[in-house]
Amino acid sequence: MKWITRCLTLALASAADVKIQSAVEVEGWSRRARSDSGSVVPVVLALQNSNMQQLADEVLAVSSPSSPRYGQHLSPSEIAAMTGPGKAAGEAVRSWLAASGIEASVSRWGDRLEIRATVEQIEKVFSTKVHHLSNGVDSTLQAGDLHAPEDVAGSIAAVFGLHGLPLKRPSAPVGVGSAQVTPQLLLQTYNVTGAPEVSRGSKNKRAVAEFQGQFTKQADLTSFFKQYVPSAKEGDDKYTCVGDRCEPQGVHENIGVEAMLDIEYIMGPAPGIKSEVWFYDGMQFCTDLKNWTAMVLDHDDPPLVFSISYGVQGNVSLDKRQGCSMDMIASIEDDFTKIAARGVSLIFSSGDDGSGGNTLFRSKLWPVWPGSAAYTTTVGATQFISGSSGPEEAVTSFGSGGGFDWRVPMQSWQKDAANAYLARKDAGLPSAADYNRAGRATPEVAAMGEAYQVVVNGKTLPVGGTSAAAPFFASLVSLLNEARLQQGKSPLGFLNPLIYEMGNAGRGFRDVTVGNNRKQRMRIPVREGYSCTQGWDAVTGFGTPNFEDILKYVQDLPSGRRSEIII
Image (cartoon, rainbow, N blue to C red; front, top):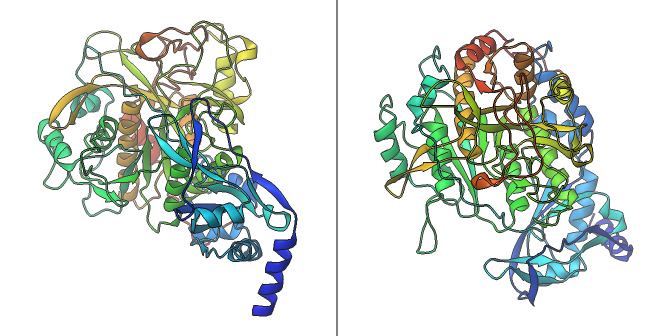
């Protein structure tokens, strides 16, 4: 066996190297000194999946209410059996790494290899150079182009940890609405009634994912519950940290306004459901995303719904802002497909810069990624037209994100609604060359997005954004899951086929027909965008939730139980 391995290693070493991933030059970031050769860097090598279209068909089968297999989500082993790269592929890559003295560990389901290697080893094995990359404030290690022998290159889908930048994320918009938004106001506005009392011993879980210095603080959450969640029972204000830590330590770390907004409004409207914070403090956004999705997929019992208030508006790879390659993005989106197959809901905010347009010039309009990926559910933002109750309109103090993706095609479950919108004369559509009529349409739904009362550092602040609407909507999803679990039924999982079925039938949502998203943050206007209309639109989706009606709808759906495995 040793002789065979040695021969394989020599054969791989003699093979011609080919480029497997390109370094992306990003404006404002420059290469500085070479990294210390002894520095240790964690790297993930994602292996090529197989049969991803077959898995996509499975997701549709278990997520479409009209399907006889609705709710029969796949197990991790079923997903691995369908999409795994095969043992030979993993062994070939491991042998290549071993030739440079790098020991790789194989992930639980065989879809990636993880290494911790010195810069010297990385430069040797990938035929590259590693430098410090800096914008004058932040710094991260960055490799040049990555190479591998032709024999193994085809087995590697993407490499994480050597390319990518921190997410440039502006602060949340200050809530300027006339209403002070609290959990109680949200429950009244969205008719949150009829749900069963939460079983504190249930396996139902929900979580927020936080990145790059957005720390939470238990003391602030406890204060928030005391002020705004009078129905809570002892212990309902406690969350579990998943990761090394979630709270700040030291003088250079602070509590994140966004993080506190997320945790307070995924927990406050529906107290008693187990809640977690999954925290990632890396300096490369796409790598952190991959670490998160991989951790979800390796987990025996992950939360049933995640809320994520992070994203990038534009073509994440080609516009050269995040330093992520297209292969990295595709690998993350493959994980989204697997997570959907597992029966986990991913809720993303739609962004606060409207259609992504330019104030002075025409430009291609992009929605926010990852919210524009195929297997995510995206939430926009609204406000009351007047006062503290009544009809709503698209938020006016910033632009609620939405539109049509250039890279991800329009999905089957949304074609009727999106094409009906594109045919409307009052849709306020951009110039035909500036958006993709055939692209994935966002958002799915919307909710209040201004003046959320958030406790941070012991003080209450009014905070807004689609990043307020997303965790609140995720809270409602966790409450819907609770109702189904108490019936002995499966969780809702990937939501979009259900949302579009309800929306097309006029169920579950209150239409928002006033407003547009032709603005950036702080009301700065842009030339092009989209308008709210009757039915689905590219600003507020199908509108805001009518919880009681959604609850009745999902309680009548099939149980999701199965007597035998069907793949």
